[in-house]
Image 1 (cartoon, one colour):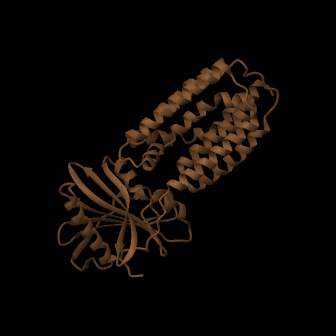
Image 2: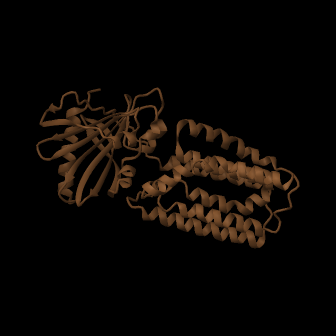
Image 3: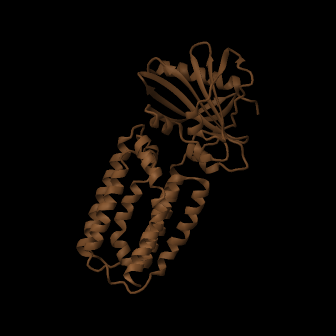
Length: 368
């Protein structure tokens, strides 16, 4: 294959990834979780051309390597699907996979193995990966995810240096087998870490804003709300006063663009709030099991206790990951965020706030 044609194909392979760069640039500027991800793209831009031009055996390629099609075809299909469903992180990952597969196709399996660590650096720069690392690490802070990414980048750079110094020979079949094993391990690991408890369906009815010991009023939905949760979702905000403190309510009936619904803690962090703790808790509502995501968060020297859950007509869950796994177009899903102030974080104060939120949910829940 002529050298000019190889460069043309390689450039074409990066186009699906490149079209997501404006989105990534906006995320670096607006999201505290993503603001350092540009470093990994910079490392790729620096190391990929440098190491590739120094690779002594890069010209030892006589024909295309069709083994790459086992990655290229699924990556293109998944890229199209993720584009239609507007799942940005999936589009970026698939864009990286397409670029990697095209490189493999035109430069062969051995060169692909030598340059793999640089493409993996691009993977570390995918938006929202810091958040999801911290989510699975169960850390309310950003730092653990950043440390994990930095350590991974260091390992990849050392691996790249090793490949450059020794230029080991690796068969394409070995790369395919290793990749398949890694995918299986990742899928098993993610399934194992996914909280999937199903509780009784809990849908709240706010047609009456005065009920039991609670009286409330509707609040205006802002343009920021619509931007956050999508213009095809039904967004409602309320403020209720009970026997003790006020309760802030955000109720959303999810539209067809489910990617507009984000984990509450992610939205809070993006807005500058501090997450003190977050955990899935088992509660009892009207004598039935009910799971919620309980978040203690701080903003402007104020502390709040928040309950978050997702429910359809069959069951509810406190896990955002499980909600996303189970969501489909044929079901109507509602998500709720109810929040109450905490004077301090001692256990008696938290217990009192929990009891008031539990009473609130039992008061407004539709009987099943």
